[in-house]
Image 1 (cartoon, rainbow, N blue to C red):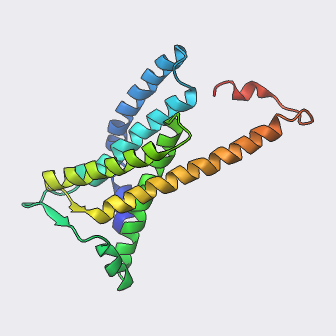
Image 2: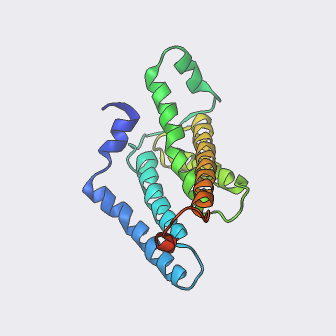
Length: 193
């Protein structure tokens, strides 16, 4: 497997997963402590742990595993990647695609953790996370700073938020159906959430 996905998969080693799990488990334990005090739900505890694991993976993929170059590299023309795609560059198409997909989990997980129905702050934090990654790449000379990546990552956050809303509607409909008096149910399975 070549390209972006192949590179991402090559990073998933036992050592890397162990390093990513340490902060995720610490967040989970802190979350359990907060849950025992009635401050957060179990779902929040799980989402925070998964988000921490995910962010460690994204940091590895976008910064740590990138080679250091002698000079900072940047592409400041907005939509430059689309010119390559329109000229038939399949590699660029997949890079754009994976940059969008990479931020979808952020949109979903941050939406779960958000207490507000409006998710503009999730969108803003996803965009700021992408800006932080791009600036770190620029300052550390690891990777190409580009506005297109910020745009694509932010779009991925938007798609993640939309998927969260769709999932929330489906869950609400299922819960409404299950709570009907004519439906036999055992609610003991829902007590953890």
